[in-house]
Image (cartoon, rainbow, N blue to C red; front, side, top):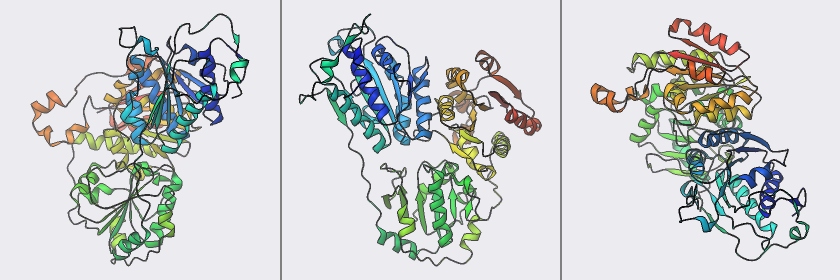
Length: 547
């Protein structure tokens, strides 16, 4: 392997440099770094590579979510570097989210030598395959040695990167380093770099055997479609707007109505076959399709998920990735077709029941009783969405926020919508959103609840180095708004004790601490004008809306 230089402080510096040179060869150009002593060889080597942008942050959990957000848009692995110990454990939530949402990440962690383990050495934990259930590939490197070729380091890194790209998920390289971590003078490693690849065992590695879904059965698809009189297409999260365009063409050809989740990128296509208010139908007992074609995954609609749970309608599920989305264990056809070739190549002729599509896409009055706060929040989110344009992208937090956006998604223009729907946690939302903002030339708007905002306050420190203005709309209902939709809320004492995380906090001081413009409104009649003012601002803004 050819290195940028033959001069290194230590063999550890040399190995770390080989890791990052391999990253550059794969066009990986973002590294998120948590400072720490044991990771000195990694950080020292990284600093030499000017083509890799460095993001430095003190909170490893927040850092990992930032990396996740960046990779969500770039579709390339973000590098995450930490020192040893609990710094590594803090990456777990973001790694879980990346695994379940098919986001590539390259986690590189420093470790103590094997000889320091199990003897009470400081800042030393068992990091071996620590993310086991949530990564596609793991490699524990041996202690750097002149007896092992640099090509072995390159090969291990190459394997990790290609697995991350092919499997669309996180991978992990663990790097033990011994002292001295750095020396005062560099050494010439020219002769060592000529050493051929070793045939000896090179550390320890493990690779998760991927789930392999079947390719589409064209004959079965054609038969099921041609026998249907009342089919519907339900579109969940799609990787990009072009995917939805293919779905829309199939819908147009056969006049099949579409129920589209906000994460489907449907907002790029204003089309009469799209129903933007699927909850209205899922709550209607007379709604009786005879075929479900579900494309993508991670539906946001609670009503839709409940309806699917009780439904016995024949099911076809088309996946973009090799991960099964069947939360209610339904029988059906589950196929992998990332390019959606099935929709354009199958020989389908459907004779629909008269007026079926027109009746499904026609918006109906929705009379389901919901609490007053939910309806007010829905109106506010609709106002925010109306103020977005093609120079914005929208990130919606989990819990209430994404479902509110889904309810009013007919108000979206040509807007990309993102959310953390892999494991659907409320942590790391601000960090992920700012990571997304890092990878786009558009202005990011975040809709987030009060609990999610409190969960990730340290992420506001990222904003000092973000040039494009980010707008954060905080829906503050003083804790646990979504849980009020649950039946358990009828037992007020029990609900208030165990579910309703009531508080009386506002976020003026937190915003001030991080130098962000802050404003607050409690009179919802002011929402329209205030949202417009915030969107026109050229700086980062937090608008707290009190319910």
